Structure formats: C-alpha cells, structure tokens
Amino acid sequence: MSQAREGDRQTLGEFRSYLYLLARTSLPERGAAGMDASDLVQQTLMDAHAKRDQFRGASEAERAAWLKKILSNNLKDALRRQGRAKRDVSRERALVGGVDESFARAEGWLQANQSSPSQHLAKHEEILRLPKALEQLPDVQREAIVLHHLQGLTLAQTAAQLQRSETAVAGLLFRGLKKLHELLDAG
Image (cartoon, rainbow, N blue to C red):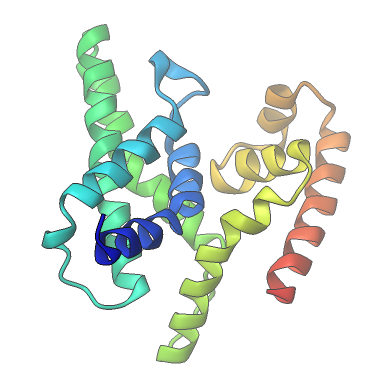
C-alpha cells in the first residue's frame, strides 16, 4: 500500500470518534431495526476512502464537513430502508428530516456566538475533541450527557432510559459535565 493511501486512511480514522458521536446522537432509538452507529461510521469511512479523489477541501474542517455529509447520506439511506421495511412513509420522512437537526444539536452544544475566524477554528477543534473527551467519562455519565444534551431528551426521559431517578441523573450530568469541561480545557 502506498504511503499516500496509508496517510489518507490514518487521517480518516482520526474522525472515527467524531462520526460515531454524530451517528449515535442521530439514531432514532437505541438498536432500532438493527441499525448500529458503529456500522454507519464504518460504512462512512469506507465510502470516504473509495471517494477520496472527490474531496476538494484542504483543511481538517472541510474534511470533517465532507465526512459528516457522507455519514448523513448513509444514515438517511438506512432510515429509508427501515421505513420501506415497515411501510410507514410518514415516520420515514420525520426520521430522515431529523438527521441534520440532531447533527446540529451535537455541534451546537459546544458552539457559542463566535465571529472571528480564530474563534471558529478553535470551536471546530473543540468539536473534534468532544468525542475523545466523552470516551474518557464513566459509561453512565457519558450516556446521560449524550441522551440529555446531544439527543435532546428531557431529564425525566433520560432518567427513564437509564432506569435511575431524576435526582441521580441530575448528579450524573453535573459530574459528567464538570469532568468533560476539565478534559476539554486541558486539551
């Protein structure tokens, strides 16, 4: 394998955690119809590798946007297949339409009203660091943050999903966010 191909594969692999977080927060239900965030990310990386000649950007931000678009298309295709299998067109449209919204929620969680180019670059770098920082949290704290802040579930819905009290989930969120901010600040 040529060094250029190996370098390209390595570069794409650096986005795995970022893509996984986007896929995880975009799936409508955990384990819905056999769809798995890891499978979607793997398909996205394979598609990106196969289409690497089509990438016209130069920066990491442009590569992230390109990969996000491929992931979005793969997720929409998977949701359409799921919708066809269930023959519920109205549900399919709602799920497919929610993909971009959930991507925006995941990225918007970190974004502030930043206007300078350097602030935009810093924000983008932080978005790419978020998945790696989340991986360092205890599983239950990570799950609480993903469900509540990234998937947009209410505290009560998050508590029901985690089978814990709302008070316990509020504590998990508090401790998880505190640790997450420390990890992001340290990076």
